[in-house]
Image (tube, rainbow over all chains, first blue to last red; front, side, top):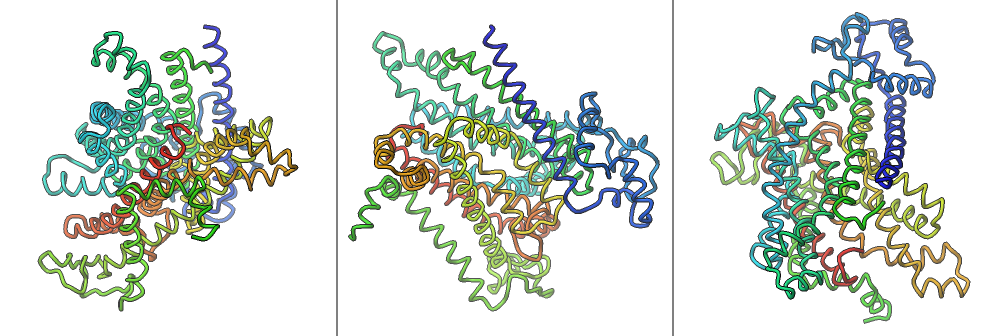
Length: 326
Length: 297
């Protein structure tokens, strides 16, 4: 058990450094690029003095390290700051009068409100992808040169070549506009998550199916499979008890390193296409409105989640295979 | 065959290319891709109209096989009467250039960092690999929309963002190749003869890094083309009036119900290019396995 503890401590401290680093990079990037958020907040009619006054109040004219330090100490207390643009009521307060920071929504609240939508979409997408990929990937791994192996290769080649934006629009056009089977734009119930989830699932399946197939195929070549058969175990027993277990480790690593990023990236794009009110749409809109606190909050949060997923995956793989001790 | 080329065909890179060429999917996809590129380069040059010629009279013309389509616009026109075939081909050309240049950039950067990290080892290696880890934990799309969204996007900045997001994979793979290569006989022999570290890194180790990353690079060109389309679609890619897949698709969504072809046609061209790249990439991957033997490395 001591091993697990030192492992966790080391990886967590590394993870914190990574999150801080990413936070600082995004933080500085947002402040060196052209485009003054205060100008967008107060609108075109405000005078130069008013702009300076508000920037001063928000602390935007202090040196960068000072600003970042202040941000971190707020962050430690669970405060991600207030949105520059969004009001607590949900309406946009940009371009109007400044009614004090009290009226501006907490970034944390905005993120917390968006998470359930993104989680539903991501969960549904992963579920669909697994339902599709696991049987197909295992079958293709067992018979890599049979028709099922070839068909699986063809399907995953097509899936990986479908740009998610195009697939999303095609699904809207065919399923929603022409056939009228499912709603597409916005969110008024779980049905609105189905089409975007299909787009996610197609993207994930392309990667999962091929990785699973080659992992199973490689495990089938191992000596212990033949040894098990010679010792009188059935092929079915070998596959369900030994081959799949050994194939699971590369899959877990794939889930951590690659799929986490892939899922997050496509989530953002898909939410934008379908105008689905999750984290992605929140962020894309924040970028257009130069709403720095929201962008920073999402960047730090998502990086932290990715780092945590990676640590978790390493822990679980060490649990499955005791030889992998980090 | 001249001495130089026969030397090439027997090197590890030459053997990998021959193994790939032996696969039918590689040949078919390569020929198809070259034909597509030739079309994308030649047709806009030969055509009398340009991809940005606006012609209000011709707007919303469907493809030729549908009712109301004309032979002068085989794949129809968009909301401003611009020819969709030409726009798709120029979009393809732009996407390919962005994809190839950015992958080349991430390969060069990754190779530099990977070779130095793997060859020097020690503290240099630790620091460089920590940076690589950190970079890999940032989701590309967040980095991209932050940088491109708040600055004015140009082809150059799009390429820069893609390089920034993509180099760590190359650094990692090339580092591990360098680690195994630098323990081999011929590197030790070169050291004994008195070759310096720079000569060993770039003359002896560098030629062996291609097989493990060639397929990643080809697949990445396809991935980067998708990213370029996504950026254009969100409005943070190359800006109109330059046609890109992203901004044509974004236009198309506004007229989805009455003019589906504005979205469908460019997507078909992008899909055709992507699937041939992906087939070439996976043929190279199998070829690598044939040449190097074994799946990992």
